[in-house]
Amino acid sequence: MKKDFSPTLLDFGSVQIYLARHFGFCYGVENAIDIAFRTIDENPGKRIFLLSEMIHNPQVNADLLERGVQFLQDTNGKQLVPFESITKEDVVIIPAFGTTLAIEEKLNSIGIQTEKYNTTCPFVEKVWNRSEQIAKKNYSVIVHGKPSHEETRATFSHAAFNTPTVVVNDMQDTVALSKYITGEKSPDEFYNEFKGRYSVGFDASKDLQRFGVVNQTTMLASDTQAIADLLKKVMISHYNLSEATIEERFADTRDTLCYATNDNQTAVYGLLQTEADLAIVVGGYNSSNTSHLVELCEEKLPTYFINTEEKIISKNIIQHYNFHKKEQITTENFLPVETPVKILLTSGASCPDAMVESVITKLVSFYDATITMEDIINEFAD
Ligand code: SF4
Image (cartoon, rainbow, N blue to C red; front, side, top):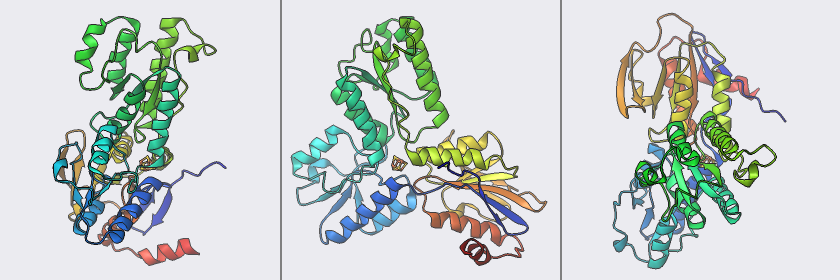
């Protein structure tokens, strides 16, 4: 059945909120949170560690810390608690992004059963399986993802275990990589240009002759498509291939974005069909999928990326995050004077729905709304 991606209008009279048809929590995040809290309940008195942030959501991570959970690493892989202090009596939870084989082995060697409290999302594992399948057919793997993101580090490690692997961050990287495929650049330069992003023993003179592309699950769909298309085109032209023979050198991996990324991004395209004054995107500031929703909205209208309703200081002031510059900024008069004010609203895959509700409540509180939140809920319940 064709999915509906048109937004839902929450009409409070002087403020109209258009809510994306698909937003917020995905299966993988709900599953990870369930397992994490169950683990706490099942292990009273034990030390419980999370390998890194459970998901990129500050509230969820703060709740876990409050329940006594400790982080072993920060989100960039910096060690917060030394592995040497971990014993086999401890519990270590693997986050939804998964982890590298090296870390898994390290924990196993201490006696930690990593499979017992593993919240790796099945959609991330699907990417690992896809890379393994093409590796068995002697393809190298190109991972499109943010090199320092936990999920990309994990996917890189799993792919690199099976086959030569390299990570591209964006189109610029992909264009640069193409020059090694066509021979425009000497393979010797590859090792410097892609430093820290290729597997041990990667041979730039032969490992780019036959490959497949997989993605971090939360990239921007239009970017992943453009990157795969460019690489395919380069292979067709360089090796004189056709659609019929392309598989000789370019594996059909199909898109490895997850359903939630696809649905939330497509719902934003649906949302942007509506003329509005501004957009608000709610989610963790280090959340990849949320930043892509922001990117899409920014192209069309003023967009404010916030991680809690508290960032809406007043009717005039909002503190929001510029993820390009990685800094929080303050904007005054973000709400237009003329009513009705039309606001587009969505949230990332690791943002609880309650947070979106709080944002709506806060916005509505600035107006003499003739309709209450309860009225709206009843309207949808009818
Ligand atoms: S965004 Fe997708 S891959 Fe990531 S946890 Fe959610 S469902 Fe899994």
